[in-house]
Amino acid sequence: MKNLKLKAARAAMDLSQEELAQKTGVTRQTIGMIEAGKYNPTLNLCIAICKALNKTLDELFWEE
Figure (spheres, rainbow, N blue to C red):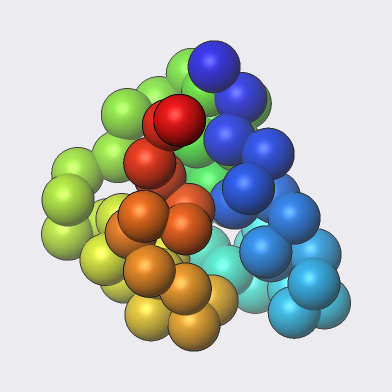
């Protein structure tokens, strides 16, 4: 399942996948795969992404 919430939060902060990757210590490809739903990130990576985007785990990763 695509993570459109992550993509929207990243876009709202005017960050590219590359910029978010640099902030979280991963590659641009990793961010792209998370957004595409092709990679299940570790909890530590989820937390790093949330901190970089000023969001909570629920806001970005919880499925309704």
